[in-house]
Amino acid sequence: MTEGEIFGLLGPNGAGKTTTVGMLTTRVLPTSGQILVAGVDVVAEPARVKQAIGVVSQSNTLDRSLDVRENLYYHGRYFGLGRRAASSAADAELRRFRLADRASADVTALSGGMAQRLMVARSILHRPRVLFLDEPTAGLDPQSRLALWDILGELHREGQTILLTTHYMEEADQLADRVAIMDHGRLLALDAPAALKRSVGADTVVKVTADGDLAALAGHLATLPGARSAHVVDSTVQVHVAGATGALPRVIAHAEGGGFTVTDLSMTEPTLETVFISLTGKDLRE
Amino acid sequence: MTSPGTMSGEGTPATPTSGELGPPRSGAAFVALLLRDLTVLRKFTGTFVLRTVMQPLLFVFVFTYVFPKIGQGVGDPGGTTDFSSLLVPGVVAIACFFQGIQAVTLPLVTEIGYTREIEDRVMAPLPVWALAVEKVVSGALQGIVAAAVVFPLAVFIPATSVHLDVNWPLLLTATPLAALTGASLGLTIGTKVQPSQVALMFSIIVIPITFLGASYYPWARLAAIPWLKWAVLANPLVYMSEAFRAALAPQFPHMALPAIYAGMVAFTVALTLVGIQGFRRRVLS
Image (cartoon, rainbow over all chains, first blue to last red; front, side):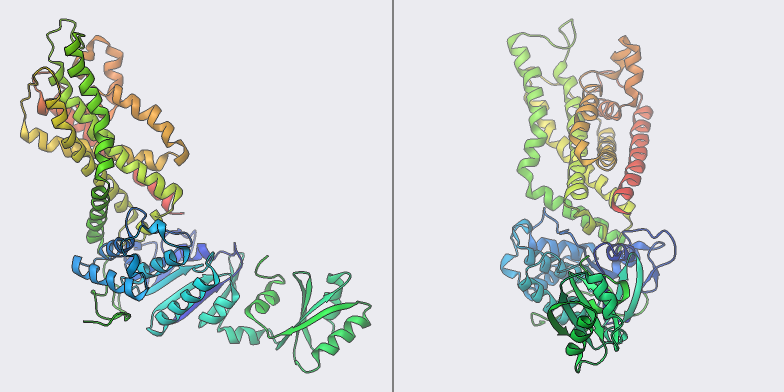
């Protein structure tokens, strides 16, 4: 990772994203190999690594015995801030994350979005070198998700280095400077989102809904001149085509030439999901 | 004054934005975690006192107030025994022990087993073993507070007079050790026992320990039942009770002081090591 970037780790559930973050943040011991965070070995010197990182894990790990402000204050104390410094840092984060009016509330009384904001506020309070967020928007309503994206964008502009895991391709696409695509514990691709999309070699994705054997249709459409690949995804066939002009009539003609009846057709630009499909042959939600 | 909504200024940055990472401030983190536990204890003072006081209060009330009043004897068949005085160290030992276990085990069960909020505490910049030791020290502090809360009850409630002869050096050294012994057992139970089994553990481990912990009788008097006298040496509470008895009521027989200290130190070290190993297994994968 480069300093100041948002690095996205994209993959379906079970791809190994959380395990990867766990290893980077000293909580999961790697079975082999060496991991350095800011030049420090996570296995040999976990405490030194922990001093330099901030972590927002998937589950709510707020201290339920403390109120909202105390969660921030004691976090500051854990990381070596004095009483005064921790106090003013807690107040500053409360204002910044619009939680000031909830300062003395019980953390169990917070909504999901507010709890998540507090976790992010807490994780950056000690100014970590690297901030790790594991599926930060999973389970959030769309509004809270957008609010969190705004916050992460703001932190990014301030130069915060962020590693983010997600299985929402829009999230990786929107936020990340570079994205690593993972599946089954393996790294499949790593590049800027735009470069990943270009790497598919197609500039158009045609979604075909048709009657009959979709797998056979996919096989047939893959032979269309200009088609890079075709996959069955969510009971449609997605054809990755180079050259948008005239793509739709060509797809229909080719499908019908093969004896298939097309019932619906739509055209989109390639997304990170397209990249994932072309790498694994399956869709992110599977 | 920094304007709200900016990152700069307020608070010393814990880490520079670039360059070599400094050493972790593990000592500060350890102290801060203790402060956090004391804050929580202060917040829940009411429940803490109720939890600590109820059992010894009833015990002292029934055995040293009600029994003498209604003429029902307890203890020495001769009836001359000073049971009230004998009970003070025992009740204090149990309070210290029980609180030490509860203060460590119950939060651990919730934080590890249900809320997973331990993951956050684990991210504090100190080694995982030090976090486990912090739990023990915090539990021991609460055990000491519990002992101090229960002590006046045991002294002032009995209907018959209580004779104590306080050996301060002994009391001041034995109390923290006794509290650590109880809290280290709490760490072992809290990390080695599945959360769903903890209630059961209280019944099959903690309750027998309290009844067979030489709290209500001096260990030496178990000479009448030799197998029991030797068997209870595996019970850490025996050394705690004997320590408080030696420190508060030396008119009763007690185990030799070196044996008392050795027992408490050995149990504390062994149970803390086992507990650290269990803790690492539960929070790291």
